Image (cartoon, rainbow, N blue to C red; front, side, top):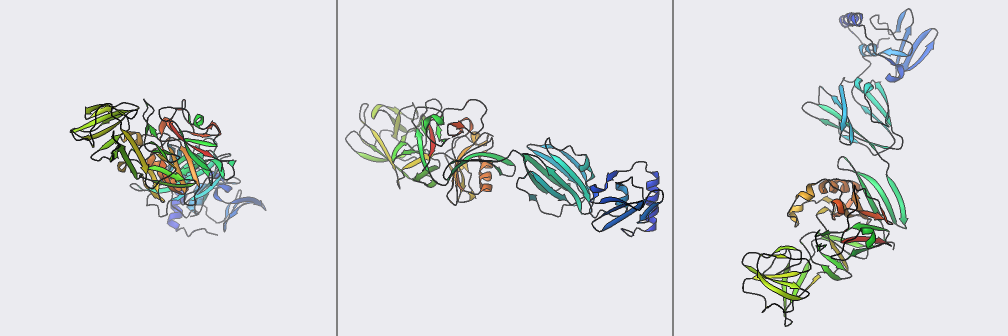
Length: 495
């Protein structure tokens, strides 16, 4: 039986080739998807509609090809199968190495890969077929803990991989110029799920954007979420709500003074004022994200009231509440401490911690003002919410990628470009709330990772050293070094 119609000139060339070749690649029949048995003194190799018979001391009986090199028991020369046309796919050279967290195997092709990119969810076992004869996979040094079985089949190279106690995730995709097929393999730690209370659980999951990113999160279908902390005072999140199921760090603050930067509404009372970034707003277990509509009013010495802009939302009269330079050239500022005007100064001026300032056109205050006069600042959300906490930037809006810090008041983009732990609040379209911290990454990558998990809305909170998730008093998100005290946090309680 002939496996392929080999012309006699090609047979002669093969004969000359094999007679001059001293080396043969002898591999077990199982490597080719064939079985081996001895039958009436002959060696029989069979599988997938193929039957090969060799009689020791005589030669090949099926097929009769005198030029073919002989087998050795259950081991068959690769050269024999190649000469018979056993392999129906082109041959590809291979190389491999580490690429970040991935183990990368590259097939060098002569023609572009015709298939589509593939990926998989994580399992201990993984089998995939590369549609090429990739002999180099037999010598690959696979990552520690990964066991591999390689079979050279007619339709391609089959990889069967096993990693006990791990999740094997892969991506298979083509590259051009020159044409290549790339396999990225990720042996990952298992995911975690622990119940905390009815409808609330702690999870450690992998998201992909496209590389794997581990997230540490508390998922709640119900519960009570409350902002905790005190402006000007810093503590570890777990100490801000010692009886909470979970505590996630809150928004931004001035590192020197502990002054909160951004909106904070507690039980309907404004604790801190907006700073031009997206905020989390909620009543009960109904959550919203957006730029808060906020009305700020200043009351003068005789009870006069005037509407003012607040921080980055400038107007003719603007109130500033965050330490740093306030006011602009051509303005004056009334420096206020304890609802008393301390001084009226030329702008810009440095606002000290614990004070606020009212800026107005030079010589044109909203009402007569002198040092010692009373001056009060009030504000309210419209519409009102019981709770609000400003973070930013927005990551996901209604199931779409929304990371664009240029739309929010982030003057220095570098912190948002750094690879660091990221804290975020998110929820799914079904209403499951996530309080989470990621391993080090960037906000843009986190946004894509959350989309891959099905997030409907997501907002970054403070990150870097402040990013912390505490569950029942235990820090569950990884952090190198000592956890950083913060000013505000989000505490989740059982319903």
